[in-house]
Length: 341
Image (cartoon, rainbow, N blue to C red; front, top):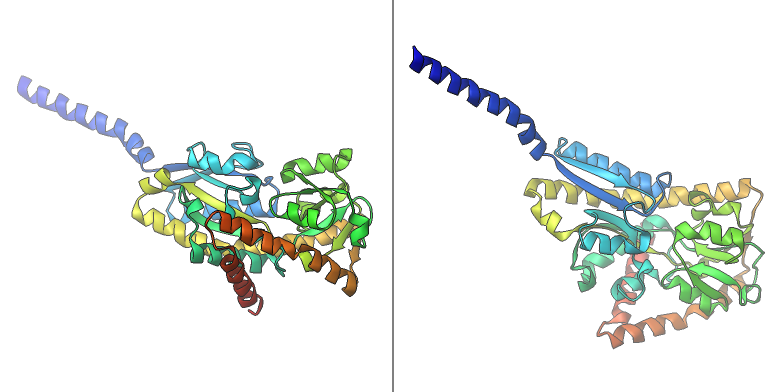
């Protein structure tokens, strides 16, 4: 009888341990990831990123849980990439140009090459990255890239000619700062998150960026004019990258799901850029602001003014052992390819 009691107690103990351990085992199967995004939560691009995270969670049956930190609350915009490399965040989205000189191959994407839309720009930068495989991105897992529609000039006073722009302080980043300089204005580097207050206080007199910033970053409240300078239209390439060690630790089936979802979200972001551009245009007009069209002759002057940038980029890339001329040719070919679709 005592022997049976002992056996019963052992069985009960094993059962209790199994019941207590089960939640821990289930919890261990959930992969928790954090995602640092520099866009504010209400921005269309943050919403697109959140939908990507939700889709990954859905397709993995809840095995992956992604916590979003929008508005640079986990890592600042210019620290986002290093935050991923160093494991502060598992995934990060920000702008290559916020770290000048670090991504010389990707800098070519931001040249004023005449991107017609956000969808074209986004498709171009992804195929460009796949084609040239820049070593400067070897320290992360690139999930996908995206890029805004043509960067335009938004100012507190009207700009109709290059002369009107002379010596104006214009917020810009990366190679867009060189566009500003080529046009005779004074570039002032700062992230989008600081631009509203700087315009409001008069620290800068204008900003270069896609027209979506007028609503997405509320900048229509602190500018009065937009100059449609499509002849110098540039884009800004942005990354969605993951910590390499964290990526390597994921099961193969989850990696496959994340890669497939990421490839599908390229167009989601591209189309979102075009939608928010439309919204930005409508919003600034609703506030009584004006959109200025350059004459054909003036547009040609602006285009001619930025051409030396191409040669300058090629020379700078060459000093680093890079074929800048080939990069530009690849980008021009891809712009033509996707613009015809």
